[in-house]
Length: 80
Figure 1 (cartoon, rainbow, N blue to C red):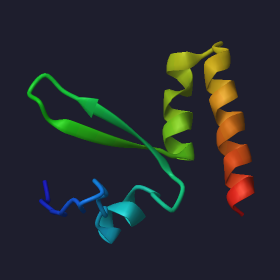
Figure 2 (cartoon, rainbow, N blue to C red; figure 1 turned 45 degrees about the vertical axis):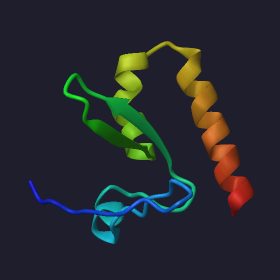
Figure 3 (cartoon, rainbow, N blue to C red; figure 1 turned 180 degrees about the horizontal axis):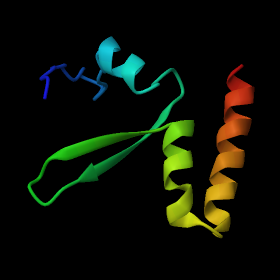
């Protein structure tokens, strides 16, 4: 496991190193999920098209995913 670090700004913002952004398809406007595991570690999960396709099976038949995908696409079109 490679260790990278970053520093929070006074506004609570954090810049993810470019190496990780490229590797995981994170670009401007990408949504993320924050999870905390049982050890108190914070996990940042980018919500990319790849991620949506991977979880599709977990949420099969649910309208929630379809609604989220539609909203995500519309937001992307608005941003250009």
